[in-house]
Image 1: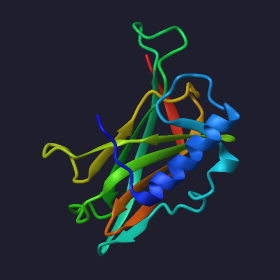
Image 2 (image 1 turned 120 degrees about the horizontal axis):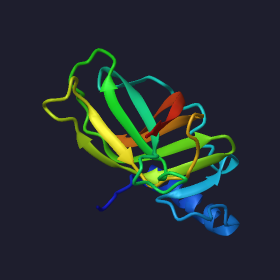
Image 3 (image 1 turned 90 degrees about the vertical axis):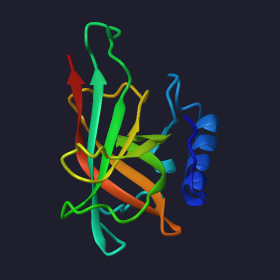
Image 4 (image 1 turned 45 degrees about the vertical axis):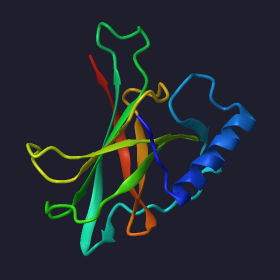
Length: 170
């Protein structure tokens, strides 16, 4: 799957990549990059509600690790899912593109380009699914913050979900 970043997101991710390479801060092979929290300040103050295109947008976030019997004994790496939706449940009017996720746990940030698709016609509400996998092996049973970025209407936007539990599937 090919990922595209907006210029602003590309700048954030490029800086994170350079710093990750320079510091050697990630020893496990993961998708994206694991960097110290102090290196990623552009997501500070990301709102939990965003007014765009005359609509109020929010994200619902889910984090999880797989510990099913077929998984390794220490579990599979972290997966992240975000659902971009309107507060009212109306159809999302903007066309988001170039998503990236920043998952913040303690002093570390998992920075990863994400895949996105419009929610199925059978979904209970309209919006966009944004997802990434093969992250660090944090948790389970701990909390992390999730910041999603996407491009729309010629700009890069951020939305946050705080205190998202990292679930364990068994």
